[in-house]
Image (cartoon, rainbow, N blue to C red; front, side, top):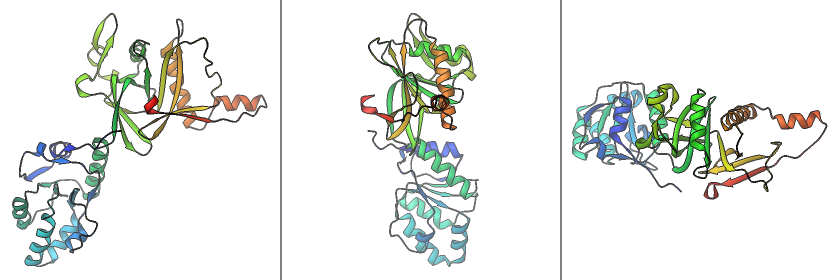
Length: 319
């Protein structure tokens, strides 16, 4: 399983265009590993039970108004107790002015002091979303991730089965490549996986007999995408005449990745099968199922038959 990840404070500063009031050292050396943030209203009142000093602290209009109502000595005492926790950063929202005590204490306790132009609620929601993506549990799997009709389809299979060749044909048909060969998968919520490509191989594909190509340079910016939710997993395998393949689609297959169930299909490969068209149909059919319509169940109803559907789940360790 994935280990705990961190994100540099410099990336947060650049992403949200924060003003640097005080930085005790280079922002890239300050690492954030908590996805939650805190508005320290209770802490400014002196309550520190259950307080997590590893979180970024946000001072908004309400906290600023409270600090403005208390006398200077009390404010100094309350702020010193907060800065003494040595949190990774304190951000003032709404471009509010900072108290001189804040700057002095930030320098004393080596706490980054930053300021945002955004409203407190907007900044907090954006920051939490950013941290959820960048600190999400992740794994890397061999395969190709491509967006087909808005559905993120993760194509897997043994090396040489034709994943990249199928991806190229899909790109030529107007779909968008996300990652080839290595797909970095992040769990951004309890039911959502986001796939992307490692930075050093983004937009590149390997085609046997041709070599390495750059999909963005060759087909244009509209042919690529940086990340996509994984909605369907397709495992391509060489046709096995002794294996019975699903011909109805009543049962639902899933693959469990990072504890998230993703619908999956096994597509047999043999000469004459147009895999790009098959994957287009698979993506559209998956979207239709999410919208509540299952063609197999509809056919059974027309025939007056009743078949019990079941779920088959494969864990990612065996995938």
